[in-house]
Figure 1 (cartoon, rainbow, N blue to C red):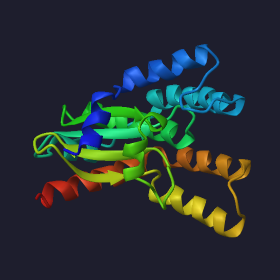
Figure 2: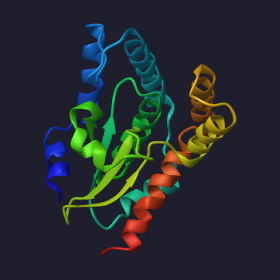
Figure 3: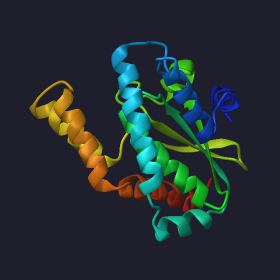
Figure 4: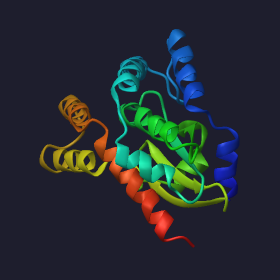
Length: 205
């Protein structure tokens, strides 16, 4: 396992620990990350409400559950995130439920982007530090097998269309993106991650 990944894992949070960290910081009027601002704190508050809702409403498909439980090996999903990230708030509750339903085949761990520069720089998206980023690690082999993120394909296409036709990210596209996630109900995240895990299963080194 690369030393950068191993170091990040050593300092990673469980899902419950991550949620508590974000909540505790909000109680102090802060957000995660190296920069602090009123807008980032407000985004974190909004994201906490979203995650609370998703934890109650998201369901994992029987197909996804079956495939995850029949993986040949055990894996770690190491996720790079921050509490203020809207995409992370939509995706992490899904990953957590998938890990929970996997019969211990998946162990979900989370690290903060701004505390893991070296790791983040290894998993850039179009040279940008976009999050969340899921790094798939095979426990038995101790190697990284794949990565995914920062968004499902449909959400990525929505953002790319906006940038091409309108320009910089604005409040409208942020709202449109959240509506996309609401309509998708976590289906895309599940199908894309399951496909990655299936490809690893049938194309082992």
